[in-house]
Length: 245
Length: 245
DNA sequence: CGACTATTTGACGCCAGTCAACACCGGTGG
DNA sequence: CCACCGGTGTTGACTGGCGTCAAATAGTCG
Image (tube, rainbow over all chains, first blue to last red):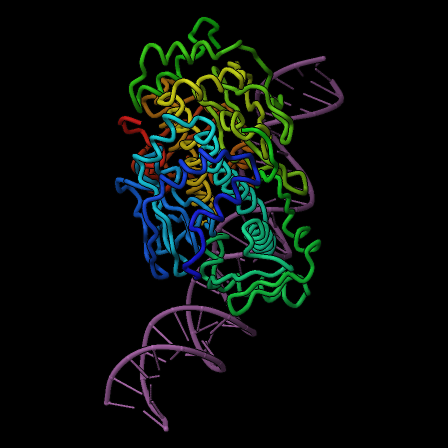
């Protein structure tokens, strides 16, 4: 984790892919960031139900939104990568219905809610953009409902790989059909509604079929068209188009 | 469907459960409603990817957000009941990644996006409330990820019954542990990621166990504690608490 | 009455969960 | 230095939940 990068850089990149941002709006955003802190892998940043005072932008590392299920299982609802606001919705909701945890060592930037509130009072266009990003998360989560509800194990994992590749590529963390994927097979299982053992079986199949290899914290996609076809992947749900918002 | 009710009444009820609304804000909302129209069951109101010009408030009947899956299946991501905005997120996203269809005959109120935009320019508190309701939908959808990803057929259906009961109760359409549920078993399957046949088996089990009966378009809950326990249902995700927003 | 949809039930097969065993690794402590 | 350990990955055997196929019934609409 390089400490010298602009903590807001990747978020601004994601933002400018979708719309213009005036210098004043960028200043308003930067002024809303209070500090940057780090946590170790496994740390739970937000516990469901607790009162929130700030929102969390991922600078480096992976976070996850997850819920517990009876029997000790967990279900990851969304994996957050650098440039994502992990709990911007917490600004509006005040408490969360799910936990937020660090899947890897992370560096995060904190945005106090009172400063975000000032943005909603004085910057309507920037406010709509913040709203927009909470809705992208919702869209990613809807796509997960479809995948988990109606697809088998192999397409679920293939879909996760497609999704993470495009999201990471947007912020410069993936390219050449490979990216760092520092997740255990248990993590991937939690994200796809499968057991770690079955994730292992499916990764083996994808590897032996020459589609993709996930190993040693790295994902390599050998055959993107086939991976996309297995996943039945349509990137429309990522809303990467540019327009006035 | 009684034609004489206030089309915005149920939405205002849901809103005032969560926060105060000034008379000026109520007027701004009412002024943003253009017209009320009806559609028959099965009609697709919004096709994924088309440019949107207005948002849809459910006045009467049930809508659904859904996506198609290869092989002719569909996955319902959320069922919308009277008082819900079915595509308020479309105001910010401009197009949708999913379809919106009528599960029953419906009456809906249309809110042109240019009028909603005026609200975001001049009414920050009301804007945050609109944002809030798009996030409640996101929360309902997250809870579905957990249920579909990690729970078996019976708890999935039990959870749907718990969720719909509380949401309908809030707008006066459920009470005494019963409510109109004009869905086919195929619809329930699409909403829970199951086949209609297996829905039938599970409904039979719930009925014979004295937990709940779903029949002839009506749901009757015989044993709420047991249904809630089967569903592992925690209503926190509905954000029914009142506070300044 | 015929066509269609929705519901119900039984038989069968497969995908994925469960249980178990083993290999590998980095860290820890005797 | 090596034994030990917990976490992770890998594989095989078995089981069960749910999908698929099939067929019968009932209700509705034309």
